[in-house]
Image 1 (spheres, rainbow, N blue to C red):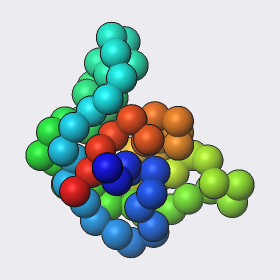
Image 2 (cartoon, one colour):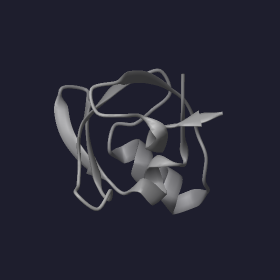
Image 3 (cartoon, rainbow, N blue to C red):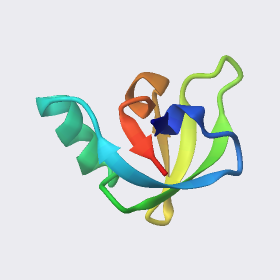
Image 4 (cartoon, helix red, strand yellow):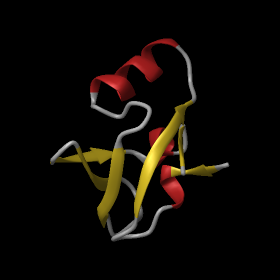
Length: 73
């Protein structure tokens, strides 16, 4: 299982599954990260957290803690 956290700058992937329960999963989905959507990594903060991704045509900053709950292909 590869997660969004493992992507490097410039790489693209497709979301396959969201892990987590309740409010956490709902928050991730509300940000536009749903099954089948394509994401790419734009930037990573100097200390590694957060990371900036492009999803559905906009930039989104996401914590690595949340990124590891997103399974990709």
